[in-house]
Length: 340
Image 1 (cartoon, helix red, strand yellow):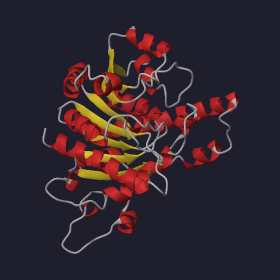
Image 2: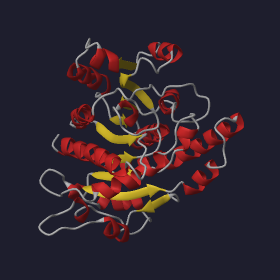
Image 3: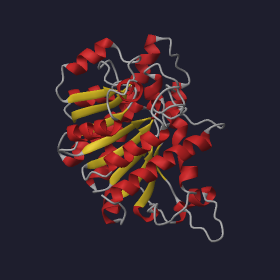
């Protein structure tokens, strides 16, 4: 836990904007005061959800992607704390734990060149080190009986989410992933495009459903690879939203059937959502409302084990938009999961 930076009352007060006759989300969340004995503190805390940030874009860089995902958690927390606390938002069920500090690694990343193979290899080794910290933290949260809500970073962190949850529950995990890409690339060194393939190869990931693949952006080689695996299934965005050969709700039902027999993770890649600033922003994708429908549907199931919202890129110009978007996703998840 040496990378964990706790979210504290001082930070909370600096971000909170109180108004008369209003009660803000941040006024009712829980925080911890010490990093010692995190597991014991979580067990004894009366919360259901533990919010953590992964401010990094090392895995994205290592996959030749557009960096910027390291800024997302800060953008989200500013907005989330200042939404209303009311009968719909369940702030008292949430612990804002904090974030993993990868600043030292991010500084080293600035000296690397994406056009040089040796630098890509270095970045992939960095991503592998990040895996250990993510896995350890997620393991602790899930082992304590709480549900992690994991914000920010690249999709490389799916590996740590799956491994940590799997080890905590002593069983392989299933995953449903709203994504334009499979993220099932070759095991060529860790990056944002192969978190699921590594987790699958190492036995942490069992059944995997990719929802809404973009037909223009997945190689035939990868499609052939996943076709050989009975435990992997998918649909495409075009089949659902363009050609309308498939119905969105029916496909959610099919995906749930594929993953819900055992604990499963919900992965949301913002690359799949239309016009959302992300590492691979798309002009054509699912609407924000469809993404919210998706989260609501899967979060209702008793075996939903975590949610990870990743790949969004927050800048000074768009941070309010990104923060609002992901705050909606977080509260949608909590609402649905609380009432399951």
